[in-house]
Image (tube, rainbow, N blue to C red; front, side, top):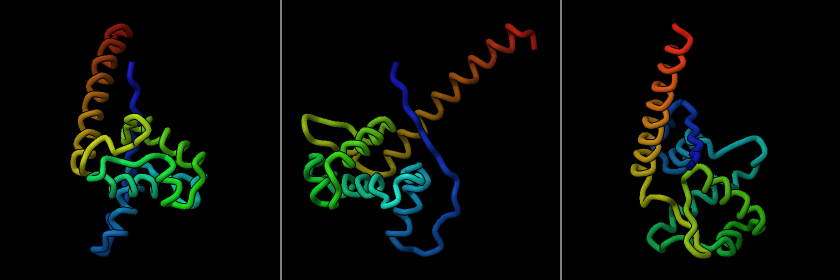
Length: 132
């Protein structure tokens, strides 16, 4: 059984019409930041992979070199991004699951609808068994 973890953080939209502000908002809204990732390396990897879509992705060594990170750090975050369903590995290359952010959001929405549907069915079964 495939498990997908989806994080949505409701945040105020960026005030400025600035691509960096929008990317920061987007990354934060899908949970790419946490307290332990002080240098935002997971987000930086995500953005680098987004920019590499037309090249077909990158290797972990290329990501490490481009971002000035250790290969271990890159591999750690790639694993997290794969678990989130945002990144796929093909051979020794990694790429985003989709070719643009709109498709990414659509995939997330579809996964959420499926999860909510499953919750509703099981909730109904539980209610019936508990005679609620």
